Length: 250
Image 1 (cartoon, helix red, strand yellow):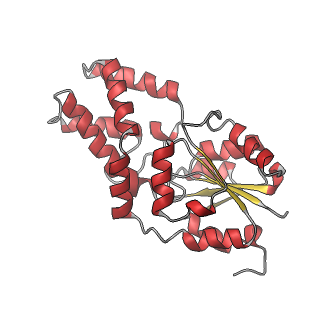
Image 2 (spheres, helix red, strand yellow):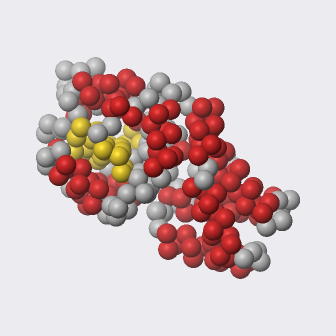
């Protein structure tokens, strides 16, 4: 099968999720607990981070950030707030504000923890082979722009879909279908690359031709292996994928 389009998730796919986002979450949660006068409660901070999926040394693939389920997150935060005697509505508001107003933290973490040139060989090669490239992420537009600018790949991207757009969120395939329609592609001509089970389900529901998992995000190898056609250690391994670039490429 000849592929002509490819859609990437962002966080955990284009870069290692834990390396970049763990410092951001820690600072955000620290600020939230300080707002409630609980900044000295290390156990409370650790519990909230682990519930989200940020362990002390690694990702917990069962954490809320990989569930992509707003209702579940609100329910868990409600139980957490009652158990720890925190005002629920203020906690949710503080959490959402902290998460979506963390652009400067994200920028600093990207600069400190990732090489801004690492993705260029892959994206240049994709464009040289005529690929139409999309980014579909649950993050907001500003944070997404910061990431793409850091990695210097924004000029290669033909379509960007973020939290701020009107498309239904993954695993609903609405943005996948819009990508196909905009560029006159058949679903089977499109590959999807992601780090979490929700990305794989998104690709399957859209009937993507090739589904690729990477181990730099949720690290849920059991689910990724079950749902993807292939699982790579990192996105950089795609540069030698013969289904993407053909058998004559090295």
